[in-house]
Image 1 (spheres, one colour):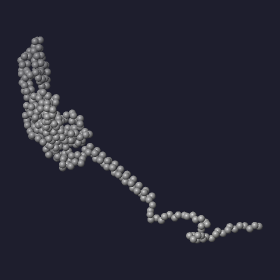
Image 2 (cartoon, rainbow, N blue to C red):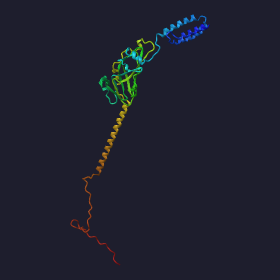
Image 3 (tube, rainbow, N blue to C red):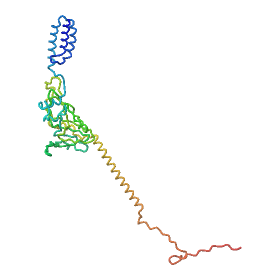
Image 4 (cartoon, rainbow, N blue to C red):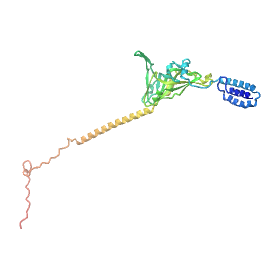
Length: 341
């Protein structure tokens, strides 16, 4: 009897695992738990019953475990190095641009920035950036930056990548911005994934939420791309991208955002401009009022030539009265005095 129980225990252990050593589905595990009571009642014929049960479990594990992958996982940096170039995940592929488990993408040939306050939307077109150039300095070749644009604060922009991205049908991509771009206030608003089967350049939609303008140069390392495997079958074209990706920034995208963008920064500039105009008008008005007051005060104190001169009073002595120049005046009458009594 102890030997039969040992055989039964070994059968139960084997029934929980497949030939490859992987865990069986939960249904098989529950089935093996039920078999423990069943084997206890059939202790007289354990080997024959266990053999048939093991065959059924192995057939079930081979039918369910071989058709689907075990799960989804992100590609490591080593896998990007070994399979990135062979599967043309990124073209052109540069091993030095692998950053941990991500691939670094650079700014490409085209940029579109929405018009701000005071800009003419009719003259606002996408910018064509010149490519970087190699220059020899002190016997070494140095890569110079290409064309440059400035993204004002509070404005929206489309950025085209330099590299062409090709995602396999059994994988998908995840995109983001590098930390140094985020620290300057640049925000990615275009989404965070790349569909399976996508093939083309990526267009990033970004927004400058920082207080200062951000200069962007062709060849700048701004973007990151991660690749992750998909669980399940991926052979149906219905569930992957079949249309070609972007080669440039299409006019259909630009038409949706070509209007003047009244950002908070633009409104602040307008308020400051109006305040400065008000201060200038206040100074001019104060100067004009002061000048008018001075002129009125001077006019009030200035003598008028048409007015006659003021009459002068001349004192003439009493003895000189009666001369030829002045008529004689009768002498004054004596003052009467009282008679003595």
